[in-house]
Amino acid sequence: MPMINYENVLELVDYVKIDSFSVVCHFKCKETNKSVVSAVPFEPYDGKIELSWVDILLHPIRSYNRYYHTPITIYGADCHDTIVLKAFKKVSKHFKWNSETNKYICA
Image 1 (cartoon, rainbow, N blue to C red):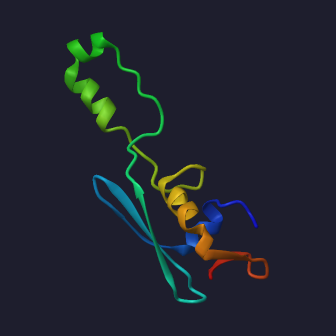
Image 2: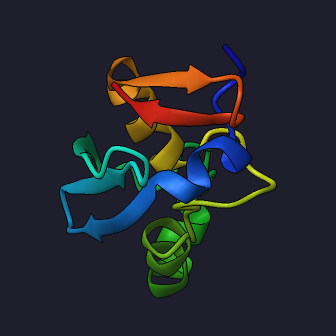
């Protein structure tokens, strides 16, 4: 079974719904026409944002924007730990790798 990555999951993504608490990904298999839904918690930023007390006191608006408006990667070819890939890993037991077609098929 290959590694779960952008190329293998891309054709299964039907749509993604994002709210302030969760990301709901709908994966649809074109072979079987079955859908699988996965919900993962919304994680705004997985990295570390360092703010000093001086920044917070002297520049509160800039500090707020830096903390709460950091862009996140929902899905992308150059990232290995995106929200959509986390959602697919959660439901990957419902998919099997087909070595003939080199893609995941809904079981």
